[in-house]
Length: 430
Image (cartoon, rainbow, N blue to C red; front, side, top):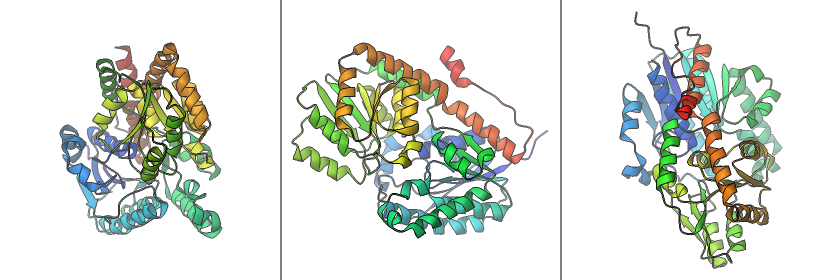
């Protein structure tokens, strides 16, 4: 007996082929929903991070994945402002608002009927779009939280000085929470914060992660790839104010007397120029900064290195998050040295995948690097632990099954048959 397929509308500012954990998360969800018989439409923006031109290059596209995404789906891309996306708060706010107003009409005038809408934030305006879609289609609403927006902006100058604006942001957040049928978080650190808002029963923890095939491919790359002749420490991702990558430049300066250690930074962001200026100011020859690369190439570069660096400046707002690069380093199988606190520090310590020091402590970061540099056994120990922890806790396949289970409960479908459960552990045992 053929059953009527249910329709899901996903609202996400980021989506394939954009790089980043947020885009990967939603893209994988779309593919999994379609595999399980759902009809999926997506409202998103044109790929623009770090700039639109890079997506004209072949390395950023996956033809096999595109077939899975586009076949039978309606991907509506909103043409947003040409303003360059950065970590600057006010530019990001402008982009969020621009996406909001240009997406409203796409949602309101849709003729399709939906059983469920999934909206992703950090942008609170995407949450408001979720509310509009819930009312418009009289459907269920799942909010997928990748960042706690008010918490992250409360220490930004304008909001620190103007408590009224901050209060509006918190009120908006509570309104969005109130309209949800379920709230998905990608960091366990968010749970306590949301529980304070009396929505404990709606919260489900589904972290970002890596696919089994990715982890297996990373392992093959790691084994086949010759390490750099020098002991190489790498940082990948955003070079913004939250990451305070200038501290890592000071680490390179602190260790420049050791000729066998070099540093690599791959990424872009508002602090990139400042980082380059510092390198030039200190006349450092042991550190290089590279432009963003396709994920596959980044993995190959990381696999050649000996330590993966992660850093977030000291701020209570960042105690709740875990940078995606930490999960990537685990999956690739290199030890982690991180200047982080809170949930990210807990994951690294619990997994025993590396060493954690205080944020902005470049001396502590230097000592941690030297500890692994001088102890080959610790290198192997952290590498193995990270990979195992990633398989057990950050496996995309298992996380997506959990997501589908949640959707089944929210939409009250009873015909969902769980298949391929625990695929990560089965693959590991094989």
